[in-house]
Structure formats: C-alpha cells, structure tokens
Image 1 (tube, rainbow, N blue to C red):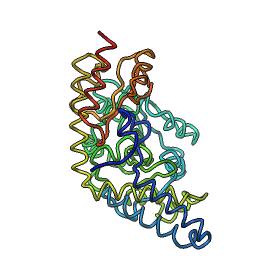
Image 2: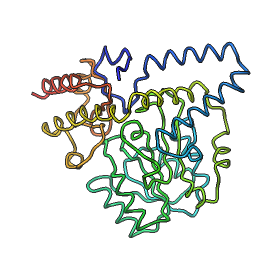
Image 3: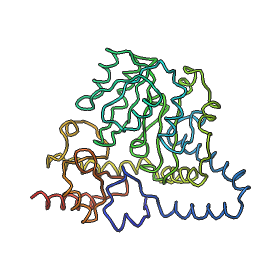
Image 4: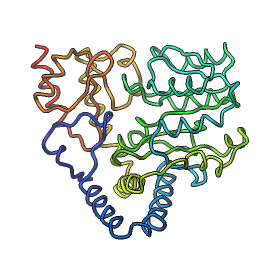
Length: 345
C-alpha cells in the first residue's frame, strides 16, 4: 500500500502509538464530505449521515470479525467504556493491571466499583490467573497492548482463563491493538472490546467503536437497543464517523494481512536492535511476543536529540516511546539506530 501523507516523506515517523497518520485520500474524502454537508445541511443530517454510520458499522464489524448486531460506534474508547459500565452490576469487583492506561482505573473508580490491581511485570498472564483464583472478581478489564511498555497480552491465554472462570467478564481496551495486530472478536474470549480510531486505524479524532458479545448482553440482561440508547446521548460527528469507515475500508481493500506482515518486519527489526543495545526493560526483552510499541531507556536529552534529527517520538514512562506501522520502512529503523548509536557512543 502506497500510503500518501507528507510526514511519511518528510520525517521518520515513529509515533503512531500517539497518533496515526491520516492519508491524503482520507483528507480529500473529508473535504468532499464537508462540502456536501455545506450544500445539503438538514438533508445531510437526516439521510447522508445515517448512510455513513450504517456503512462504518458494517466496515468495523467486518474488520473485527464481529456481528453487526454486536458492533457499536462511539466517539472514543473512553466514551464507550464509560457508557457501557452503567450496565455492570455495582456489586461486581474488577481486576485491573497496575500502570495500565490511567483512564481505565479512573472510569472504574468513578462508577464506584470495588477493584484490585496486580503488577504488570513478569509473566503477567499467570499473575492474572493467580489473582482470579485467590480473589472474587467478576470483571477483568485491561489494555491488550500497554501504552507505556508496549507489552502485548497473550490473547489466547484468555481462553484458558475463561475456561476456568466462564462467568468472568473480560473487557479490553483495544485502542493500541486494533489496526496493529490481527484480531477476531468472534474467535477470542473477549466479551467486550473498546477502541479509538485515531491511532492504528488511521481514522483521525472523534471516532471509536466497541463490540459487545450477545452472550454478555444476555448475561447482563440488556440488549442492542439499550446499548444504542446509552451511546446516543449526544451527537456524533458524521465526518468523524465516516472517516472511520473510510480508513477501515482502505485497510481492508489493501489486504490488511499483507500490511501487518510489512509492519511486523519493521517491528521485529526494531525489537532486535533495541534488545541488543540493552535499551528495553527486562520484562519486555524476554517476552516471546510483543507489540510494535517500545519504550526505551532514555533521558530528555536523548529525546531532544531524536526530535532534532526529525525522528517523531514521545516521552513516556521510563524514557522515550517509539512505534512502527506498515508505512515505516527499514530505512526508518536504520536512521533511528544510527542516531541512537551516535548519542550513546
């Protein structure tokens, strides 16, 4: 896929985990759609906007391998989770991960649920299983990919967890997962997944999604219509909603599996180079599988040098976070290491 965006050409963009690059094609579509709104106003709102929403919902369902009846559009991951937790009984206790995306704990706390946290370090999957065996938890909520370390939770391990705890509700923040890794909602043990479109889906801001399994709706005594009502307490931007549909359709039409393979090649190259240089935290370096997000041991001077060399990244956690998508090349990785080696020699 020849992904057209000026920053791909003019910078070494290693910051998709912060915000993804929208394509020139999407920008042209947004301009055209905005002009249609200007020309048609009420007709656009009552007819065209509904067509955009229906199309985007279908595209997301296809992309996530979910039923359309299980797929919902939101303004963001946080908005979806915030709304859906109204359907969780207040007596339910949550298991969370320490140092996870802060909004997850904030939302759980604001809803006044009891919760406990476990360490994110070594063998996190086994730690989760141990905590579930020792405590009484009804919900496990976590980010599939940790925004700081890039740790990728073993999603297949969730099947073992659900086999032992079939009534456990598994809720996942998929913002750093969807669009970056293969995911089948139909095949996974996840009961509900929530995400924003502006990172790996490359859809710009103001849009998101969530998928809720019908089995979970039945377990909670709720329905598709009731969830729609929760999410429809405010107007979604038709432009933002349509952007999500357009961006996902681009990924699907350009063979998303091929794009992921290209991304993995760059990610593997980056991982090996960082590990060889001792720039990764120990619990990340020993993982068999990892995402394409890496926080390296580096101070603010290193960050400033990278920015000066037009390498786009961000300060996070213990140091500097870099991330790669399918539009990154081996040339990008080589430049990054060339600069890093100059800094550290």
